[in-house]
Image 1 (cartoon, one colour):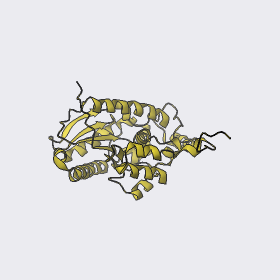
Image 2 (tube, rainbow, N blue to C red; image 1 turned 120 degrees about the vertical axis):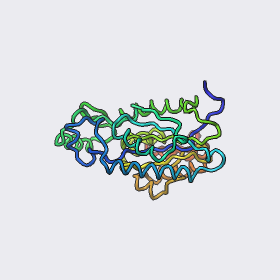
Image 3 (spheres, helix red, strand yellow; image 1 turned 45 degrees about the vertical axis):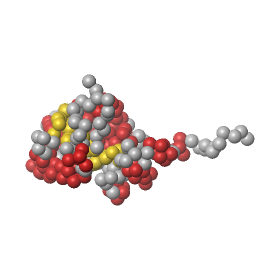
Length: 280
């Protein structure tokens, strides 16, 4: 049964897994299936440290009666490196703070094929750079546009979870959703969420190992990076000035204000638009 009042998450936090064996040795993919690539010891340490930082951030920024009762709910990719990352992150949270966790296959890594021969993959990735990162489909694998389709489906499910209060959050609590996933999948998630174009996606840099980015609900009811992250950080992520300005408007702006600012791409699709409907 759903509740009459939708309880929106205060924050949605996207996190990439810690350093994996594949990050330090591409040859690992030739003998180990991608979904079984483990974290290194450094990756485990990164995850524990990220968990402490995440808990401190949520605890420090949560205010009021609801803030004191903050809770977290985790979504995690089924890959070994993301599940291990979550296990280490979880050491920073008490049982009281964690509502639950769900393994979600749709936020898994982009499929690059089966066993990946290092020399062949080097050539394939060079081809991807010439073709374009979003539309290039790996032989026996996926393109980023394929990932976009399944992430879109995941987002629909996430909002149904919110609408029906499947997180079972108490109205007196502040809800934080944490998504432990992969670099490209996280960028595609943001592309879908903020309605970024393919060109804007192509600008984005990957997240570092155990880097997390915090989308918080602004005063106008829109999620934004502008509360927890600086313009300089967003610029380093590869975001354009227009993309950053949109994030800052979301801090205090209403949906109507955002709609007024959403003419960013008109010049990309039209040669000229008259201001009025008057006929010559």
